[in-house]
Image 1 (spheres, helix red, strand yellow):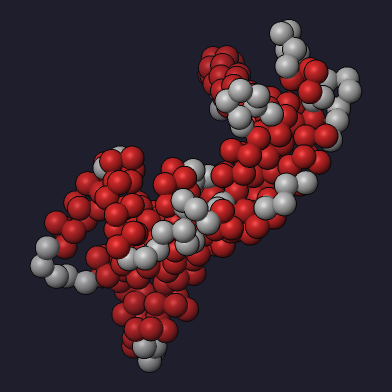
Image 2 (tube, rainbow, N blue to C red):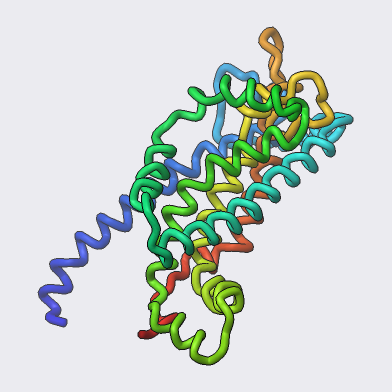
Length: 281
């Protein structure tokens, strides 16, 4: 490369890197403040002169969080809801994306457009109809009232995204598999499924975050049976209008963030990988 061109490009690259770093710091600052507030003693949290550090870290807020009798149950309920949503939505979306991509049938384009339209409807606008639907189905105060709506809301995006991954797999590969004696089911699960796994991981991340952080459905559908509540509801234990426990709120929020970070670490390789070079026509 011409040294002069390299020198001309370098300031632009440095500016881009500096901008990316600045954006990353802005995005990460609320997370840093949350963790910092969880370790701050009560006096520093309520101080009129907040500081972005603490010289006397304390675990009192975490002790209050883990001292809550129902906190462990809330945590387990959140894991069950998020796990069921991720597994069910991934499998259904994979099969549906394969169907709308590989098969030709009437109203296929209309169905795909409906998936996009479903993404435009605000969740808040459907909460009341869903409440009556869950009541009539006898699902109020159960984890099913949280799992089913999240599966329904995550499917349109997952199907639309996985459609591109399925379409990227050449049909010649499918034909070759059939010539070699593979059944449709074998091709589906042993060949196509591993190739679209990056897309499944990406959609699963969004499904997991949506189900794990849900507060609206948990507040609306779990009315009287607190044993079926999820982790976001634990924040209400520490938030009181007249005397909020901000240390407890931040500590509980920090604990809620840990499973999300672990999930990202486990799937990061699949998340950033693509189909480039995996299949050749």
